[in-house]
Length: 88
Image (cartoon, rainbow, N blue to C red; front, side, top):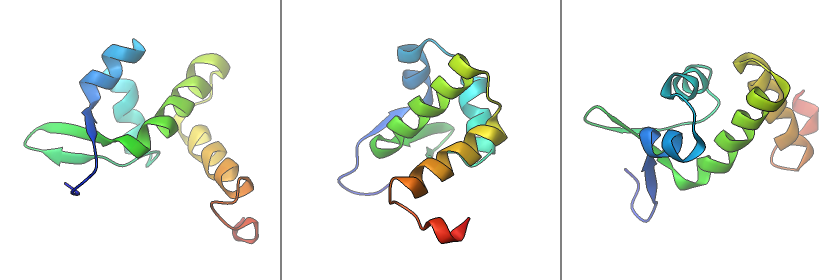
C-alpha cells in the first residue's frame, strides 16, 4: 500500500452504492480501475472512486458493458486532457 493514500474496501463501496461485488470485480477484470490487495481484501485507492462511480453510472443508466465502459472512460480521459488524443 502506498503511504498517504486512503483506501476503502470493495465491500464498503458496494454497500454505499447498493451494488453487487461481482459488478466491481468485472470492472477490475477489464482493467477499469486498480486495487491493492491485503490478504484476501481488495482495497480501492480513494483516487479511483470517481472512476468506478462513473463506470457504475454508465452500466446502470445506459446499460454499457464492461469493455464499452473501459473504452468510454479512456476516451473521456483523453478528451479531458489526461491523455493524448493522438494515441487514439
